[in-house]
Amino acid sequence: MRFAAALVLFALCHAAAIPGAAQPGTPIPPAGDLPVPTAFLAKDRPGDGGKAVLLTWKDPAGVPAGVSFEVRRSEPPAYEWTTLSTVPAGTERYVDATTDDAKVYRYELRAVAAGAEPSTAASDTATAPTDTTAAADTTAAGATATPATPTGPAVVSDPVRSHDNWFRSERTNSFIAAVLFTALVLGSIQMARSGKPLFIRRIAGLNAVDEAIGRATELGRKVIYVPGIQSVSDIQTIASLAILGHVARASARYGTDLDCPNRDPFTFVSARETVRAAYLAEGRPDLFREEMVNYVTYDQFAYTAAVSGRMVRERPAANFLIGHFFAESLILAETGQSTGAIQIAGTADPSQLPFFVAACDYTLIGEELYAAGAYLSREPVLLGSIRGQDIGKALLLLFGLVGIVAATLGNNWFATVLRTQ
Image 1 (tube, rainbow, N blue to C red):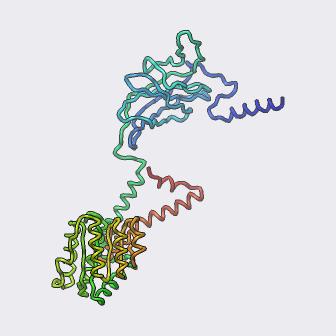
Image 2: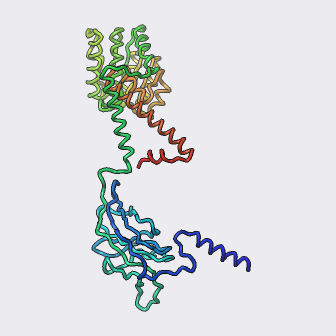
């Protein structure tokens, strides 16, 4: 007996703890006394990528306790209403994120009495959009009538269709970051063009460039420079050509033979002009020969076999493998290593970096390739770009660290501001 009484007491307390639930003994208002929401409006949700409609309304004054609002949808011209959700009073907002941008919808909002469950059927049929007789149950002929669901008069929206917006407000933080990053890069480029010195840390691999060319000069052997196998449209190839200019100038200065085999015809033309300009800049155009920069073939592995055979036969003292490589990276690096040549490699492709690190003496890892190109060429655009990118990365790192500390202390403001969609 005591156990039964405890169960009853627990059930009463549990019901009282549920928000919006009817209190025991609270009379359910009749359908005609339920309030009607006002200012009901359906429109495309602003600042999104489409497929969502925003519903807003105002709750009437004096909403009885436990009364909620049922949201339903139909596709004109039919009026087969489908229940989407039931929201508690005071919400005054609902987002339908299940729309199709190619369809037009109408929405209905009506009050539901306390304790009443949302419509269990997926849809029910009304004869007009302003029909307020939903309180009456539809019964099949000869069937027993079910208890009526107390619902108030419905309000129906105008037809609405969702669509994609040209500006997505949830990505404002990304827009601000892009503008700030662009300003940093352009400002740094302008600073470099004005002649102000920009500091870029010298990379260890660059110290070995002159050492490798000097060794080739002492041994009387050639230097092979492979600028990757991609075209000049690849950013790694552009950085490689900047380094090739520095190697060619050192070769011209020391009188060392340079061999630059190419796979892409556009890269071949650019590399030849780069080497020619380097020899002219050093005042040794007489040492430049057209065959220094040569075209091999466009086939990837035929090119690899030709360059590998050249390494084995001619035994160069130094090999430079700098640019964008694919499967040929390990073949070339292993072949060059077997001949005893000093090898300096560089690529931004993470899948090829382990092969170069394992088989070469020095490796420019990732963005060191771009930094090396800017450092050696001293081109203002490249120097300014590197500096602007470094400042942007430092700011992102700083925001991230501050956000971690703030979140640890219970402040989620940084996490909210930096969230992207």
